[in-house]
Length: 165
Image (cartoon, one colour):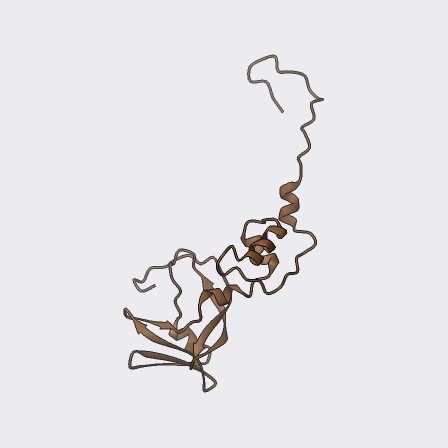
């Protein structure tokens, strides 16, 4: 961190960004990305980019990231930080499948999610694949009834501090 402190990471993964380069939207894939839930914004390390073969340059309040001599992403300086030119998030959300929306919305009935998509009840709720798993394990466990505790067994407690099961 900038203050020589540290923060806990929750995991490492791959992120696909939709960036705008010369007026066209392009997907770039970043691997070995750290997930830091306590951080309120996303940061990219120039040192890590260069370590992985990218060429990063800053000129006239603009940033350019090149990979294999091709422009991969561009950005502009705002409030002392360089921000990548990104496409709106609603376009990114469109890649989610019906199964993923079912899970994101707290395992809502699949027919209900389809109805929300059809009626456009939620802005940005778009679906790329309408297929759903036959069995959703969390839904099955959530609907399972517990068997009652057996009433047969030992007698009643007659003294204080006697063992109770």
